[in-house]
Image 1 (cartoon, rainbow, N blue to C red):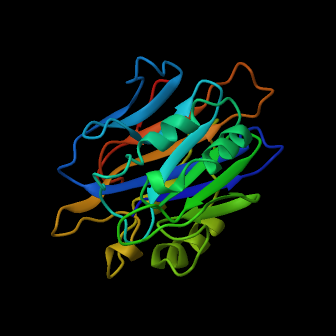
Image 2 (tube, rainbow, N blue to C red):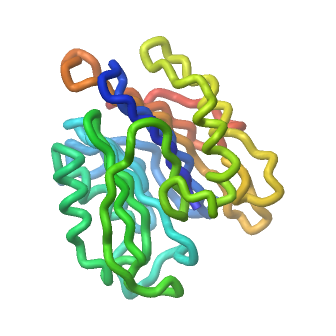
Image 3 (cartoon, helix red, strand yellow):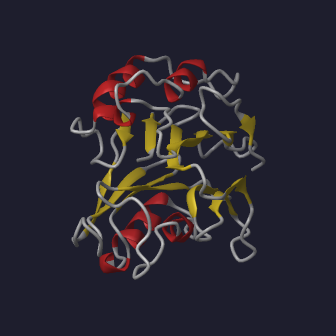
Length: 252
């Protein structure tokens, strides 16, 4: 059950802020964000080395994409394609709107259920699929625009307070001071990304369980306004629980 938090503020110098925690089995191998795919030279993404895909990535055109499981769909299905392909496929496109339309047209029975976030400096979208196998059953793929302001997504629907994590933390992110990528001040969001304290993993942003399922990394991403041609996106990455691990700069 990963988490993505998005702040959209059109007209701002930094119109898109995205924070993401990855929750996974601690023994599943992966590589920190980089240019790991020779046939996708324009993509910087974390690589799941077991299946070869990605959970979160950014391309040279300023599109960011990240995939999350939906309830009851943790782990792969050998009869279906890996959901790690989805961010990479989305990042073949130069605009979030075009990528969202393409991903909404995929064959839903090829993958287990997922949430997919696709955004650029102008627009942001949530792609939802009920999946094509496993306990979650099958359903259609849909795409919805993400509104201005703060939004949050886990395994549940966008801003769905049926998710204990969203119910607890969405008001906290709404009340927190927005990150300032210009000065490098991410303090309040960074603290929230590392906050535990819930009775269960679903109520914490950062956690570890006795079964080995835990928060294994965290990302903080900012996209500049389209007119700022001399300014690159910023990506900070913590290769572990964000309450225990320092964030470092990802080379874009």
